[in-house]
Picture (cartoon, rainbow, N blue to C red):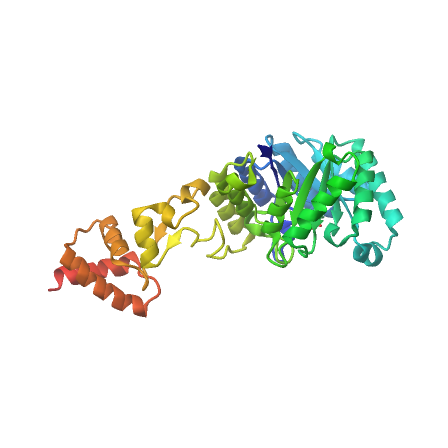
Length: 385
Ligand code: KIV
Ligand code: ZN
């Protein structure tokens, strides 16, 4: 089976979420947890961007031993020098170089001609190779770039020594089919492309970051870049947990494997949410509070009889102790009896029937019925007559 590497950028692109600012200790705590999750690469920050980022990248590189640690760098020598100073103590130092390749970015932001962009990219890769064993090169805004130009610059940076080529959908614009086609185009038009790894990096502006990343994997990418809980610039990045679990649950379809320890997913999600202050929506796939909660009577009855009727992911797989039956107005007698028994009460069929009537009356007035509500109803039922 093909191996897919997970490149986690929670501490770099993720920290670029509006309102998020992690201190050194918090970054170290997240990095250690990412190591337990067994991601392949941790992008720890952007060393040239601030003293704080430099220090965090350096300490993370010196602390983490079982993942490669990388840092972002513009295509200029001063950034590369700062990154090397920060990363050289790492177990497997790698540099993440980028430069924009779309006409919009080259004309308006860089104010450089395409030829100048190629020259800067090649010079940066060659310079970085003096220090770093692994250089990853990213074409910022790749998905709005002209494909022949993208192929040309990718060919040049491979010649210069880049061993990972990343194709970011910087503004979350591409569709899954188009993204897959870019990967195929590069594989068919760039000499020696089979000697490097291809990487996907997707943003979620149109809500397609995860599905685009999966499409890239189907079309030859062997690395995906993502963040925990999908945090990141604007609408965020592709969510690591969603890609990871999709690849696992649909292994029959994707036919790939990873080195992730999926049981650390929930713990990692909780930690990132707590430290960044970015709340995970309850209905978020895999890590949302409701991801394993069943409310309707038909679903609860099915799951109590056989979990796989309505659960394609077992909560234990991602480190959630168990599923939950939320008692509300859609719940049925089966779930009610189950909860009553879990709370330690034994009621006759007749008592359950009467309790069920009272429970439905209350559920019509109140969203969720808590254990305390239920115990109060049981007491009224059993002892108030
Ligand atoms: O989205 C993007 O283009 C990036 C690059 C810097 C890799 O984050
Ligand atoms: Zn990005």
